[in-house]
Image (tube, rainbow, N blue to C red; front, side):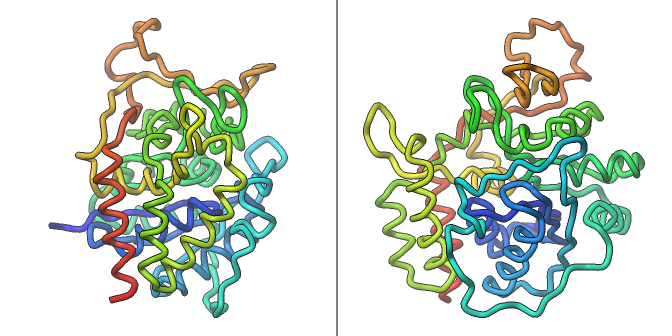
Length: 320
């Protein structure tokens, strides 16, 4: 199978680093570069975490570019209350990397990679869309070089951290609104989908049993994540495990057959008193938009059992 060429844009906190552990070891992706942005934590911290993740996972040959330090129009509102002050629940890397970011800012780095490729490529966006918005604002010709953006965020019926908004949209709603409005092919890996992709406590025991450095890291950071996301970790009052939203997003790129979704028109609320960051998804076609405006593939469901199986197989390779 030919590998899928991707760029990964992230704000490395806990679910990002778990997603990277899969993305950097699966044989289905060719990662052309990684970029960082403010989001879960300030960009200096997300960059430090990502550089050291590349070291831990044996992929220091992959270039990394540091991105935006603030959202397009708002002050940074981070998620340290979920991910801890260092973004990884206090996990410390045993060996600090000497790898440094590329000299270009992230949006310029993404542009250079896109333009160097003969065919359009996929951008996996695990973070607020600030870098991607800057790219498309400054280089609109990049649109023709993006096959699709696969984004972790958005929802139809639920929110996080507000009742209606997901973090990666709420952190920079102007960026999300701008990117979606460009009509770039856009996959929304929504909370409606990711909350069905949880790892159970038995699954996490299987991760721990792998006993390799990356699996040990995954088990450590998820242990912290369980404590800070308790409200998400129950169904009808029963413990279920933990949602790893960003892992689900990467898994769509490697195994789209596990997912169910449909195309809709979508937009983002940026001025609501109670609803800023809400992703409007025209689920019932109330707006009567033409087909060419229905550019968002909204993912609704995932085959959780297969998803977990594929993740564990890839994570086991770090011990091979």
